[in-house]
Image 1 (cartoon, protein in one colour):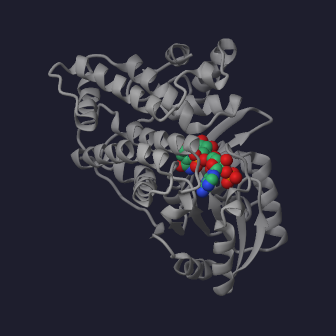
Image 2 (cartoon, rainbow, N blue to C red; image 1 turned 90 degrees about the horizontal axis):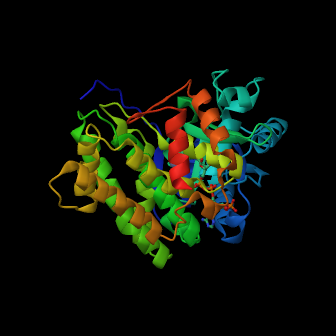
Image 3 (spheres, rainbow, N blue to C red; image 1 turned 135 degrees about the vertical axis):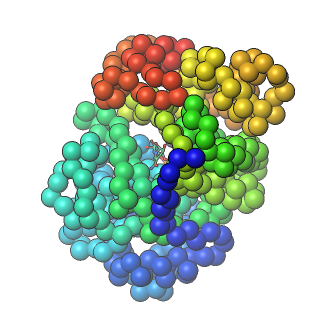
Length: 388
Ligand code: NZQ
Ligand code: ZN
């Protein structure tokens, strides 16, 4: 194993009827919160009222910022920063999925600085201070509830990029599985694919030194494969919802990348799609991942993909290349079984901008995605074309 330092300061409060415990933690962070929400789901299903009530009992005043879009936009973040300053809030509290939490993270570092928020996303400015952040997770997917990352879309430039800072680890996150029972089949499927993709991005490496992390990864993949279909068939199944929720957090809280290289490949390719076509992130990942694996399959990568096929899908095949191919097919069939459309054209993406997206991404990555296998512009384009 490589040397490592593990740090994750997020306190997770998991389970039913823990709102009061959560509100008490928020009260320790500040007395006035900017409550950030999305397009209205949390108002319709009562989560907002439940949390606000608990905050009131804990003497935390609130100001609201609603309307954060899926693939959250820079201008929405700027709105939140303006209100937070105007109202002099001392904590940011996101109630929602990854989009709402990610927007809240950029608000948290954006409030105490004069720097342009987009410059923080681009890495031109390193945030030095942040308001404390609390989250109430309502969709199992991104891991944002327990990670230091955020992904923001700039509509003007049609760019979508991730950024991160240890300052935006949430101080506390509430995970009540019941809060995810109203997530529809589409987003439950996309969330399952996103969780799996986070695990696979860290798992698919030529670095074989981290048996613990790899075994945990396989267990989380099997968990998502087991419970994703259950949550879709039985939306109120709290066992399924709870396991997916915790899998979401474990997939990106740092544990799976301990002690090895963990090169990511597919996420940046997907972010190009959702930047230009505003598609659901997890759906884009499910479409691209099997084509990416087929593209990088060779003698060097086959043993690792075969290990995935054997330990995650139980494929019995002695030859590594044949086993790897069967594993990729099983992965694709699993995503299709969740009713995820498995072609780009099914989400209204045709070939007209594939070249432009491959070019933009290659430039953003200074010529190459140095992942499981290096991906240059031609490779990215070939993967997009195969996914059409
Ligand atoms: O906006 P509302 O009305 O709340 O509805 C949302 C939205 O339409 C709905 N939803 C959420 N919770 C619900 C619910 N509907 C019913 N009941 C509930 N309990 O679901 C829709 C999708 O929400 P969104 O937050 O966009 O989904 P997700 O959590 O998948 O977040 C996606 C965003 O996160 C980024 C993605 O790129 C994308 O922008 N990512 C963030 C990461 C991170 N911070 O570490 C890593 C990821 O790889 C990812 O890139
Ligand atoms: Zn993701």
